[in-house]
Amino acid sequence: MHIVLTLTSIHDRFLSPVPDRKPTVTELHHWTEGASLLNKKLSSPWPPEARDSLWTAAALLGAIAFSNVEAAGPEEAWPLKEADSSDLEWLRMSDGKQIIWKICDPLRPESAFYALAVELVNDQMYVDTSCFNYEDVPHTFLSLFEIDEFSTPENNPYFSTIRILSSLLHMECDHSTIAKYLSFMSGISKDYKKLLEQKDPRALLLLAYWFGKVSHGVWWVSQRALMEGQAACLYLEKYHSHETAIMDLLDFPKRELGLIV
Image (cartoon, rainbow, N blue to C red):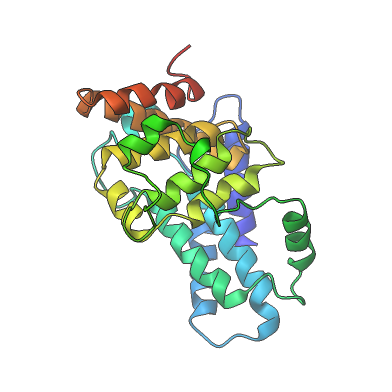
């Protein structure tokens, strides 16, 4: 209940005519209590029938972490702002969710989520990353990220991310496709995550592409995507304007994020 109340409060702020970017005291209380109770539950023995409720709590906490953005403009958002412990917190939360996913296995037949999972699979709502169609990727991308027929997730830290993006860029991000777009987060490799933490320009460019598309998606994703997507574009222009290939490819996310009219 604490987690549901937290997400409801964030949504109320989002819908406000003059949204307050700072969480309320009540919101922070429920958020802390909810996270604490989940941690306590995971740290002690729990019955098998609790798996669905544990996964629900983890999924909602992930949405809360992603939706909570206090920046008033891109200059106050990562990666432009001064570094602090909250940077890429949504990504760390995604890592934690994947661990809980494996523990709770919401795709097991007796799970409350099983019917939904079957429906999503039948509707092809998950990105197929089993193959990589090079024709879907602009030549400039292949050159910049050094992708060829010999590239693998093991020898190229950008490969998995580009493989997912190549399946997404041709479709709009809305309620019917958001599950595919969210698969981007679960597909982020450890090597690519390290590059993001280091503000590697090519890693930031790929993230800006994804942010650009999901900025038109569901409410709890769009606010961070717009703010940090714009910040990533401005960061690249500020510190990597001499890299012609990156500047050329940056036009797409800038248009998606409203930086180019």
